[in-house]
Image (cartoon, rainbow, N blue to C red; front, side, top):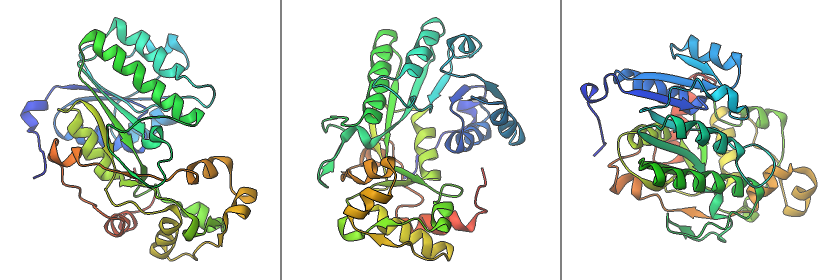
Amino acid sequence: MKYAVTEAADKGRRVVILGCGAVGSRLARRWQAQGAEVLGVVRSAEGVARLAALGIPALRADLDTPAELAALPTAGALLYHFVQPGHHGEQDGRTRNLLQRLTEAPPMRLVYLGTSGVYGDTGGAWVDEHAPTPAPTPRARRRLDAELQLVAFAAVHAIPLARMRVGGIYGAGKLPRARLERGEPILCEAQAGYTNRIHLEDLVTIAFTLGQRGTGVFNVSDGRPGNMSAYFKAVADTLGLPRPTEIDLAEARERLTPAMLEYLGESRRLRAERIRTELGIELSYPDLASGLAQATARQEGAP
């Protein structure tokens, strides 16, 4: 059974979404439909204009600049933290700056969008929310640091906190069309490890529900792992583009970006039963075929 809330229960609720991009803007409109007062927070004037065009009130504030956070109306709000850490070091200074502001104006609930990358490479083994989090790369360690900061803050202030550990996100406007059109190669499927993904709209449903209930860690995926090479080929077929050339690992090390090699160097399968058994969510797009059909039926790049 899908979990639903009533409009009356949420009318007047204040919702603040930090990092209000593709996921956040859809989430904002979901909350607006329930009568909530929503504010999207973005880093740029262009982001403010984008949200304004969608009818979403917006505020410009950069988590790298603590002085800009004083205007955040977080006291008593449902707060979504979708801002990624910076690109350097092993700690998340952006979350640290945010929590300094929240100490003065604590929200009533926190929802964090993190990454399943904190689990590292498990050699393709299944992992649930109790699995170790070695966070083997600097990027993953920054993400884990953000989680740990939020956990400590939530404990001190007795604030409910839900943490999403998300696999790859795909959907309308989030398909690798440009990469396929450039003809960039992919690792051959025989050497590619397991990856996990979730459709954008299903991620929004999960985030919306966690704004209502649920605490702790939630793995977020459709529960049907594949691999990146098969994914690129499926997207190419769906978009009517040529399939990318497959190369072996030795050549990939010479031609692919460090970020892509880091991603391909990990193999794991996410168990994500909590979103169904505890939140009561049935995914609208439980497999890649149904998700790609929906994504390509809509105009690509649509918010």
